Length: 103
Length: 103
Length: 103
Length: 103
Image (cartoon, rainbow over all chains, first blue to last red; front, side):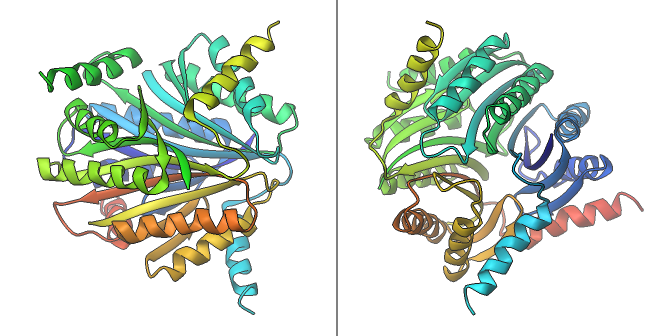
């Protein structure tokens, strides 16, 4: 099952700055073989369902191993059977419509 | 890895009412052996990480098998290493504080 | 515009336990005149869009005033024009279907 | 109150493709004067809390006026008092750490 997901990992109990923990997760996602795209409130991820979920689990495991006592993650995950679609397709389709509508 | 999660499955392409699809997912979650609690915008789920994620995957698979062409799910998932905590603990702790603060 | 929402407020920089901050928000939501229902990963809220959004803003303001340096909130918010629906309707409809399907 | 948010609007009852509705929302967000960045599972938005929330409300109103009968939106919204931070800061900080850690 192919999926496009978006992942926002929030470590608790490590203070106000969380960029160290976010970077650890970002590296795990990038090294997982999934397509990824970091943005300002999470990371887009594309691939097989099991691979995406395994990468998210590794993020939680890696942060706990580093000593992070608590993690709350928000995941948006989408699947569809009507057509194949990539992360890039989704963005380009909207960008193209925005241009067309102004012509 | 023990987890408390919250799952909101949104089927697309099936019309405005989604209660049939939500009921299918609710049955899958309840039959998964996980602790569950249905609310008005999702379902709380408690158990082992892999069991929670397997149940969510089965929801997507079952809906697609029923003919649902597209699904977008929102998951909140939390893990902690500092103490064991149940769904009931979380609610009771806040309810107790609400009472204490008014005394 | 009538809405049913679900709100999960996560304070950062206050340590691992967040029940004090969650309780402050829960009190704000309950005193806002909205219908509310606390669960293990957030709070269901029902009312007018502006009232719901004003209550969420008060939660952020109140926590910052208490000294919480950073907050990340996840909101699910739904509106529909095809029919009036309450939080209770949504849960009861699924519960009824679960019973009917086993008859 | 300055905020960085991420918004994912899901229209229900309009079929499987939702790019027309997503484009309407994207235009509203861009014309709102907020900083925005479209990605494959939502849109990053930065600005004053009230402006961000007003733009999200206009998205719901505009879609309902177009005939969309039901909408479910997921919002991540963050505020912090310890320092000023932009969407670009957040991404660059993680990107820089990724590079530094490999040196």
